[in-house]
Length: 180
Image (tube, rainbow, N blue to C red; front, side, top):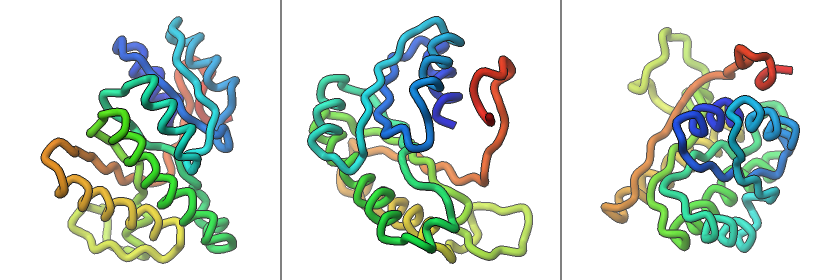
């Protein structure tokens, strides 16, 4: 999702900084984004839990807004190692909000998940369904959604959009980015 988003942002003439530990991506994906757009982006390799590195990168780049895709994403792994999921997906996300404040950035788009709905047998899903996640992964997403609600309520400048979707798959028409 991140590489596709970078392509669209660069094509729309936005400057882009990617802060990524590359656990779900690679420098090759970044290179391919640059190839597709004929534009460079700023890549900072780092862990979202590293407050100093994150704040430093954001303070230097001075973003207008953030699109937050950083996080662990495997439901099964979250059951095996829930503390890691809470550390990265909740603690790391709080670090991001703190770094945004230091950089003077008050807008975020958060990549959540439809797993926050839990076991729902009603289709199609809609935002009126109750949130009842059944995995640590889903709970971490919902926890940060709640944090964002409190964060936006705390200051009129703070703005957030939450995206909930299922496992997106696919590739760019060029075949250079997406599913491998």
